[in-house]
Image (cartoon, rainbow, N blue to C red; front, side):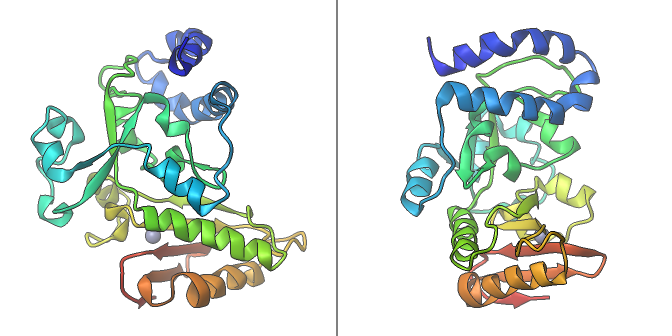
Length: 257
Ligand SMILES: [Zn+2]
């Protein structure tokens, strides 16, 4: 029995209950928390803790260029026909099949942590347009922009934190790849690196393990990114109204704000 089949048998009853109408939207996140450990159990996957492991895992995914996508039957489903295609010219997409979303990509972060959160992700949740006609189809694909260099920089950050005796897991991902429509929806800049899948916003927690989250924790992460990881190869941004969020990206040249 394949891994996909095993997982399917375990969770079918739940799908029957909650993939009806708008209920699926409501329980999507609960869903992920529920399925992820089952996925781990069945696949025996381990968190990604080395650069070689990261590389090998990344290359288990097939990629498709924007052109491939638009000229395939998935073009319309992808929802880009009406949107700024110029912006995405030359971009490559990782093809995500059904349960692939539970795969670890770097550290304990799964592919789903890098996928647009919110309404627009549901466009192809487990292969179907959830808010229009919910059903379960593992044959369908989802396309995600996810730069390998971004994953490498996250692992580098974890390793630097570990070397400095800080907690390498005391940050979460709040936003990574954004479908252009979702980016517009959340008020992101039309030039946002998130559209290109080489940017991530992280939420800082108790990095130095002193029992509270303070400016000091944020400073530790910012300095490592600035001086050791991103340097002149990307952007780092902070936001007044979101004091514990740091944006960083691997755009290829320096940017700070
Ligand atoms: Zn950002």
